[in-house]
Length: 148
Image (cartoon, rainbow, N blue to C red):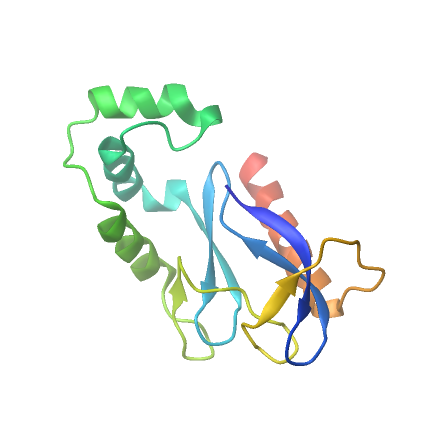
């Protein structure tokens, strides 16, 4: 599952929030060039996600275990491997406006200098960049759309 935490850029010293992973109903991808985030909802994936669930040895998450068990036992489609699934998710996510690709494995990047060299902070930030807050606000708005 996903997480959000404060980070410090190792190149420019910018303080920002790093979001990684996804959630119970979406994947969070990053651009492999600029670090821009893109949310892909499971419902957008449709059959692709069902085929992935079919191939898992257990539930995708504890909160979806009953649904996932039902899919594994009753869905008649062919299962997808994790590698095939990631490829399909990335294809659906498309290209970033910067020309990079949204990938499941791309590391988040500093919103100021786009460096992928950052450290997770164990202490709380007193200052977070405007671009970091903007990205977090976008994610909250997307989550609100999903749940309403």
